[in-house]
Image (cartoon, rainbow, N blue to C red; front, side):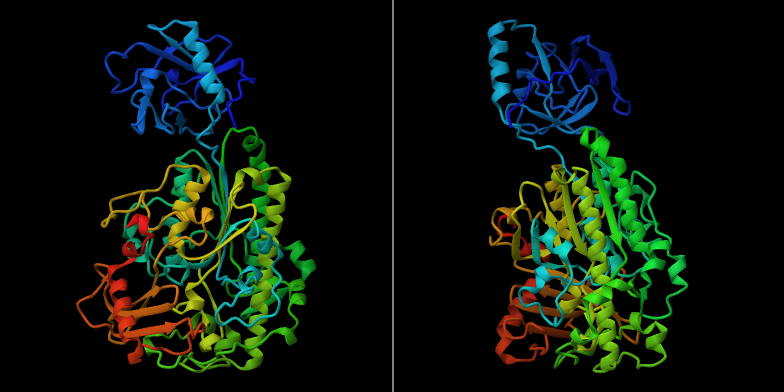
Length: 623
């Protein structure tokens, strides 16, 4: 779209008179040119250029030829304000709180060129040029806890280990139909706090030094910028609710540095006193009187959108709204009406209720998270290998998980409908992700806490208005650390730089890459591997870290002795154990091929790739 000169305002905001921490002063009708001396401009132009910018509505500044001569430089200082060049003739995107980029009016006076012809040329050029810097977009950041990709858009192709009734996920299916759907997205550690910390900082667990549910990355690793903080730092209203960071101590108590408003935490006391086991179907009428925690979060999200909409629609500011749902995390609590979608006779048992043949013991999780609930701990075993729950209990839990998942889908639908009703959908990027996968009795396992495909594979999709409207699907390998740079690019913010080898003192960088190039070509050559890890402790106190490399065909894991002081494996020692699963013939990971001589060459190659790490698996143009 070309520059629209038909709505020049009668008032102007003069940035020369406003300090960097002050609101601009407003002048009515009178336009008095103020001098903007470019830092480092050639002497022959110094003092020759005066400008005034009409910014009573959001505006883009087109500087004079004196400023444009050095347009190859990326950063400029004008009257105490830092600007960034966005095109070759010197268009400046002013990164200032509460303002987006839209050309309104520039009056430029050259002391050495008073010619009318000059003005005719300039006006013609500006009137015809395209706006190269797109308006910044809002972000709706949706999160679900413990949700494996068991929604219809994933299940129309074979997903390992899943046998299921027809899933009732109409809202996520609809969102996916307008999004870039990342079918092969992998988490960096399959447990809540480490996974969320990794995604929200864009860095891997050995960098964040968060491997458990107790440590806060700013205390143990570095003052790393988070996704909501990055948007906050670029002038967005950054608002969070529900479960985004893992709550309490591991998040620095929901990391107030990341938000511009008080964080919303739903009240769960009413229903907590009524849950006495692994699941509860809440009476629908009672739930209306006493909303469940996730219902409260959805209601708060809708209220927040209503509050934000007027200013956003007037172009006064952008928002980053993070909405985190607790379900389908244990205990599975949901309104009873969602059980109707999953008759018990339609719920099937997993096809592989036994541990993989040749699986090392260190790879096993005894699912103590599930066994902490009284309906499990008082009746069943201790989570030993190849022991699982009775068939009736397995089906009961699977049904409850499906119902909780559909409940979250319903709440997401309410928010997305409101976004559209308010007219915000065309200017809002919508992302959805689950913090890791989940096991529902496959391999006899439950919960997460493993490196198996079912734990490390999780849903992720991003809808970008104007780019993904027709729906795109990619099966290229992506990782959760990729979301940070991808959202920044999708919203129109400056790119997040790739982290250096040692990044503990670097506040803002990422160990992922933007996956937006996959929108143009979903099948293009991309990452050669995705990396996950999970820790185990031996009886003698030694720690093993299971490092997993997922390629398009193989899942390869080395259980390495680990230096927990330096947060690095002992590469000079033989691994404690190795796992290799060939997804071409064994997509459910039922047989460990690590000792099969047929795979000796493959194992050697994968071991080398694992040790080289994620940098050597980046898309070819980035290596």
